Length: 386
Ligand SMILES: *Cc1c(COP(=O)(O)O)cnc(C)c1O
Image (cartoon, rainbow, N blue to C red; front, side, top):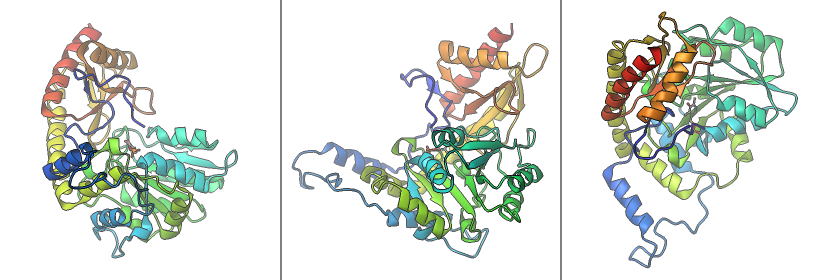
């Protein structure tokens, strides 16, 4: 759930929701096939329903699941192989977050653990399900790593914690969690819950960073991914949970049977096929180039402080400084509002999150968007800090 506070009215540039301004990971042929067939609602040569929309969709999605397994069976972390029996596909990662809660937590009794600063949807879903939250903050910026001793102690002390939601690369931190830290928690000697690793941004991290295939090794690991970010398809709502087969069976048993629509499934197939992957890789290279450019050019803007998180994502977390050179929420909030309301550039204020004092989170956009953002930020900070 990443909806903007401001509208996409054709003049604003929206750098606030970590979407992918380069568009969907679809080759020209797939886009043409989809748009021509979706417009043909008359009796043409393909019949009245070339998209098959009058039929219920496939409740199992085995072909799509096989493509997703093939994508993540890198054998960088295990010799074992993921199969469609290890998968749940849902209406975005948001459905998986909620399904896991409903699967493992008794409302009003059990709890989850999160590590702030982190993605807001874990808390939203927990609240909706009447599940309380135990919080163990990440270690201080710029590492934003897991505090393994503190998390282990919390899990030892409270058996009512049934799920720990970890985000890697983190939102809003942009930092990849250390594999050794995740493995240390998976090997907790007494706790009997599930570690959920949210890898929404994993395709912006170095090759083989995904730990998805470790679900074949650990009975207590679930890894979530999505087509919303690197694949540029937030609008189709397709999220994935890689899980040990018994957990995948539970998730698939409790979902609505037709949760994935036929158009979503068809577009997801195209995106994770060879042609779609090459579009994704090319757009990712452009995003990474613009990310590096922001880091380089933003440093010379007066009032911009340190990069607070990592660089393993499609967004960056930067401090805004007051006239005394200190990170300052008043400056950051004023800059956020002025950027949106007078410059049509929408980023996200994150200064109230744990360890993020004075921070704005900036989604990396296209070359033109970054040019406009950098100029607007420079002017805005001059005005705000005067
Ligand atoms: C954007 C994001 C998601 C994506 O959610 P979808 O429901 O798949 O669009 C998941 N987790 C994190 C941390 C995110 O930032």
